[in-house]
Image (cartoon, rainbow, N blue to C red):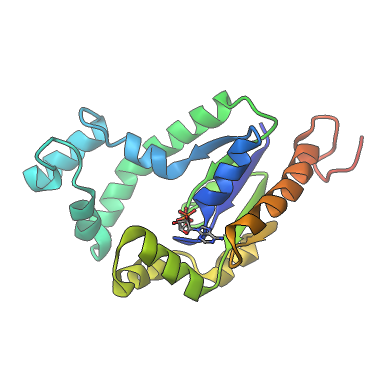
Length: 207
Ligand code: ADP
């Protein structure tokens, strides 16, 4: 299966862009969604978290207290490493499973931390959704109702804009209005259909 990795900083428009690819019939495997799913009540991962941190890691309904856990590990490298070694293999296993099961001309692997977590090794090509820092902050604050300091902390913990752009095969510019995304997505979709076609060589030239 030919895999397109899609990434971008928080609030760049990854979800908006991958929804457009999905509307064209492309299966989207979302690393964030999988990260949430492996922490469902009763899961090995959630049991390990509640054993380590006790009841404070859970909400009263028994689900994970994400906000608490995020803050607990944010500035504690040991706890962050512990959580990553617990969750990353599970997430990777689920990702591979879903990529294998995908039935579309190509498949998208969408992950905010595609580069940071080296998921690019699973991808044939990388598309970066890019916005200016000002747009990124404004849209994230409007969507998540968070302070500028919180947005800043998240941005600092992610790869830089320059690092992402350096890893990009393709770039979607998303500073403009949303209706400008459709044509960019359709243009790239045509390219990816060709690249993913078994009748073509990896460089896109006919056999
Ligand atoms: P990500 O998945 O990268 O965090 P989203 O796709 O959720 O980003 O986009 C962040 C926010 O910005 C959402 O509220 C979305 O509706 C909005 N948004 C995305 N693209 C545009 C655009 N071109 N113009 C205006 N708002 C946008």
